[in-house]
Structure formats: structure tokens, C-alpha cells
Length: 609
Ligand SMILES: Cc1cc2nc3c(=O)[nH]c(=O)nc-3n(C[C@H](O)[C@H](O)[C@H](O)COP(=O)(O)OP(=O)(O)OC[C@H]3O[C@@H](n4cnc5c(N)ncnc54)[C@H](O)[C@@H]3O)c2cc1C
Image (tube, rainbow, N blue to C red; front, side):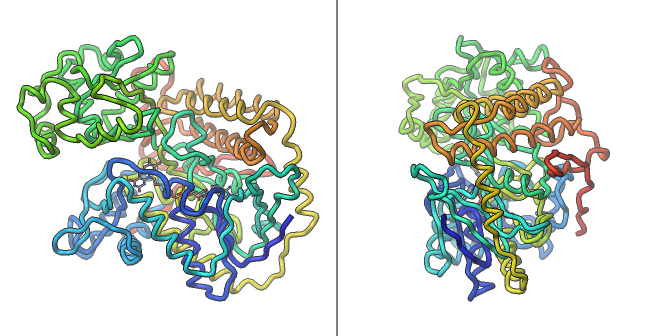
């Protein structure tokens, strides 16, 4: 076992953790700043590895639409309004107001944002936004941000510890005073792999929990550890029912948005049946179906505010009934005629044309249209094992992309526990039910910086001598030793994923959620043992049990639909319940009180522009 003493401990090395560490060092130059990450520096987590069509970083710059010195206020309003009034208004204001500085910092570090001829940063409109605020480098914007921050961090004396999973936080009364880490590896005894960190302040930046579901677009290892650590330590969490979900390729994890929908493919099941019409209002014409598919291209995540939820619901229900779902680009959907597309969609299509073809060809098949508007995607898919030109259909499912909620933070990135801060996807309260695309990468930079600065300031002035005691270490060790009886971790993980995918994905019903909770409870009772995947995997799986329960309980408590939370009375109901405004403009706060999961409804902080 190794014992380390530091001033600020940062857990997680994605965009948020790296930014927090840099700011902590700049604030507390002589301070001992430690950054611990589960994977390799610059290669683990979402920021380092995720990519999509064109990744967005939202910022309101002096020349951003609609213009004027107050245009950041429009940005703040968008976050709050589109978020369904369940985020904290003051945090939305911080996000918007600080976005220019965040962008400029990354630009200064060398992130290659696409610029216009006059040197200004190019911006486009993303899902859920009214104005063009999305800055980008291309499909790898997040990776470029990670690379630039890593380059900066290795030029400092911040101590970096890789391949170490933080398994629990250590507390003294209501204060977090450190954390317990386990090295990845195969050494037989736990003690040889143990790292104990004694810290004056701690920042959680462990990202989201894609692995709580069967299908997601996260990289491996994203098991929501920070949510579980904070929960077990007694911190408040918020908005855990709001999770971004949309159709994605199961094999390649590519989000099926934008041109992949605007090419208007067929939605098929494994029997080659076009199933969408079975779930649409009776009598929906082929033109209505095609227009809906086209529209889905501009609203990837499911939301009660979008008509296109019908597609997500159809896909989910078809899979829940034992089918597999595919996008087919060989043949047009039944009754499709290009000229039946709404004139506004036809205009949108025209704007995207890259390699023009005659009208008869674009009317011929989705593949012809995709080659006209996004030929690169066909090549990309081929390189990743799906040959659309050879007629191969692409299997899709509802995939998880982002957790809007998390450990509840306030303006300084502080949580409800003393000494504990959170930033990035691990934190909650800054986003509401829907999150305009581009604000997650922004959030990691803004609250990464703020939490780093504030944690460093607190550590600088902290004069109590609270050290982790050997008694506390023994207690934590004995907790670890309880792992060893019960089902293998892989089996438990699969079951948790199946429960969440069934009960807390696109279609959420009271009966389904209650069944999910029952199954989770039974899993906990049976216990969990370390299998060939090792100790770290088993600990992550335990965390997934906590995350799963928080998500399910929050889903059950919110008896209305809001954002991606579609609440149905019964599975067979064609439409989800509506939002209940203003009654449900409240968020659900979750806390562990003496081992009991307690939920309470609270009114978010209003926006004051
Ligand atoms: C495919 C995809 C596309 C996206 N597109 C966009 C977009 O265009 N715009 C946008 O704004 N957002 C987008 N997002 C969301 C956004 O990228 C993420 O929310 C953001 O990158 C998360 O950053 P983070 O620093 O909070 O977490 P991450 O980057 O995920 O980093 C988490 C870190 O914590 C470490 N860690 C985890 N648990 C532990 C532990 N127990 N102990 C030690 N270390 C631990 C991990 O190894 C990793 O280093 C997208 C997400 C995906 C998956």
C-alpha cells in the first residue's frame, strides 16, 4: 500500500479533470496537485476518444448570433428554457458568460478550431439551439481539446497517476479528506495495489455512465464511478433521469443523425419488414413517414419536445418485442417520392449537396442520396465494417450519449459535501432535461476551471490537520473484501445493462421501472464476485448497481414527460404523458442518508438576466 499527501486531488483526466488540474496549479503554484486517472493519460474517457460527424463546442463570442453585447444572455436563456426549466439558472448564466474565455483559452493552447477568412471562429447551429454557437475542428473536436490540455499539463509539475481506479472517497464527518485507489493489474493481493490519497480538497471529474446500458456510444470503462462514489459518501445528486438517447449503429457506435437520416433510409426489422408505420398514428401517409425520418436528422436525441420521438419510440418498442432493427440504404421506404419532402427539407437537402447527381438518381435510393450529401460517411462505415454499397444494412438501437445530471454542484463547482467539488459530465445542475449540443464540452472547460480554482483556494487556506487514519483504511479494505461471493461481475453487469435498457431508456412505464428496481434489488442480495475481468471491473460493476438504482428511482419519481424522459402509463400507450408545467419545473435530488436512498423534489435556482 502507498500513501500520498496532496493539496488538491483531481479524479479523472478528461476535458474537465485536465482543465481543473491546470487551474488548480495556476492558482496554488506551490501546492501539491495530483491527477489520478483510470486509464492512460490522453487515451481514456469520452473527451479523449469520442468522435461524431462534427463535434461541437458551444461559445458565445462577440460576433456570435444574434449579436450585441448581451448575446451571452440568449445563450443562458437557451440552456435554461430548452433544458425544461430544471437546471439552475445561475449555473446556466455562468456557462454562457464564461464560454468566450473558455474558447479563447483552448484556442491559445492550439486547438485547431476552424476559422473564417477574417480569422473569426466558424460556428454552426446544433440540435436544440436557435443560434449558431457551435465551434468545431471537425469530427474530433473533443480529442483535439484533450490533446491540447494534455500537452499543457505535462509541462507542469502536476503529479499524474495513471491506471488507478478511485474506488471510494474517504470522509471525516461531513468533509471529504481523500480517496482510496486500486491499481489496475493482476497482483494477487489487494494491499499491493492500494493507493491512499490524503487531500485537502478533491474534484470528481469521472465523466458519465454509458456502460449502465447495453447500447451506448461511450468508450469502455465509463461506469459512472463519480456518481457512485459521491452517492456513497452522502453527496447530493440531481437530474439522474435525464439521459441523452438517440439512434446509433451498434457495431460502430456512429450516431445516426444528420445526413444518415436526411438520406431517408428504410427502417427494417430482421424479417425485412418496414415497421415504422405500425407505431405512427393510423393512416400516416408514406410522405409523412419520409418527412419524419428526414426531420430526425436535425433532432438526434429523443425529447418530448420533438415530433421525431415517434421514431425513437417505434425503434425501442420493436426491439423490446424481440426484433432487431436496421437502416437500409438500398431501397426507398415504401411509397417514397423525393418531391413529397416538405419544401423546407428539400432546401435543407440542397444545401448539403457535395457531389451533385441528376434528380432521377437522388430519387432512386437512400444510398444515392447519401453519396450526394455525405459520401465520406459511406467510406467511414466501410472502413468500420459496414459496406452500404454492397447492400449491407446497418443495425441500430437507442444508444446513450450523455448524462445531463450528476453530482449536484453550485457556482464554485462545490458539492453538498465539504472539500468535494465536481465538474464535467460527472456534475449536475448546470444542464436541464435537454442539453443543446455543444454545451457538454463547454461545461467541462467552464466548471473544470472554476472547480480547479476554488478547490485550490480552499486548500491554500485549509489549516486543519485531517489525515486519513489506518483505522479508516482498514474499514475500506474490509468493504473491498466483501466482493467475492455471488454471481460473476460480468454476468451482473450484463443484467444491470439489460435492466436499464429495458426500464429506463426511451419508453419508461411505472410497471417497467418497478420491475427493474426489483431485479436490481435481487442482484444486490445475491452479491457479486470477481471473475476473469478482475477486481477493477468488479468494483465498476458495483458502481453500476448504484447508478442504475439512482436512474430508476428518479425515473419513477417523475410522473410526467420532460426532455428525454418519456413517461408512459402503459407500454402499449401510443403517446407519452405530457409535461406538467409549471408543477414539475422541479428537479429530483438524490442522497444517501444512512444507507437509504432518499429522493426529494426541489425548485431550481431561477435565471436572473
Ligand atoms: C460520441 C459522443 C459524441 C459527443 N459529441 C459531443 C459534442 O459534439 N459536443 C458536446 O458538447 N458534447 C459531446 N459529447 C459529450 C462530451 O464529449 C462529454 O460529455 C465530455 O467529453 C465529458 O468530459 P469529462 O471530462 O466530463 O469526462 P471524460 O472525458 O469521459 O473523462 C472522464 C475521465 O475520468 C476517468 N475516470 C473515470 N472513473 C474513474 C475512477 N473511478 N478513477 C479514476 N479515474 C476515473 C476516465 O478514465 C477519464 O479519464 C459527446 C459524447 C459522445 C460519447
